[in-house]
Amino acid sequence: MFVRTAGERDLEAIRALLVETWHATYDTIYGAAKVTEITGEWHSLARLKTRLVEPNSEFLVADDGEALAGVAFARAESKSVKLHQLYVRPAMQGRGVGGMLLDEIGGCFPEADKITLEVEPANERAVAFYVAQGFVKTGTVNDCGRQGFGIAANVYERPIRWAE
Image (cartoon, rainbow, N blue to C red; front, side):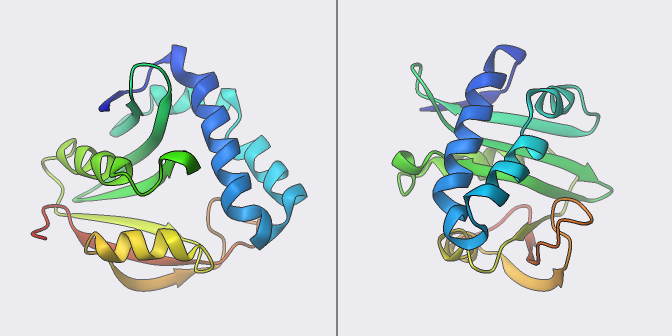
């Protein structure tokens, strides 16, 4: 498994990974129809394509040479990095892929001193992963992802360089 920058040729595989992961994770929380609505907007090929050229950002994939196992997208915001996406294919979860992606994102922004993210409180597996990676809860938001979706999330952060 290796982590590399995403390219245009990856977009369909990234979209498929995101749709699979979102349905596996969020159908029981939001319902399949809401997840389909969210993935249709947030993970459209057009939206993913804009991330490839977004300034001050990094769009990564974890690749085993045959299939993508995970994806991460982060953007620099002054001296901090906002992690907007970190998803691992359900069959590959618990194998270190998320940690590899998170480590690589941290290394992409040498000027940053912290990394922040938002996570759905009911996504217990993701919360446990981030806490194990040294993140601490610092607040909440009521419109995670996009205003009007009404998705509450907890905000977590940690120093970009973290000693385990």
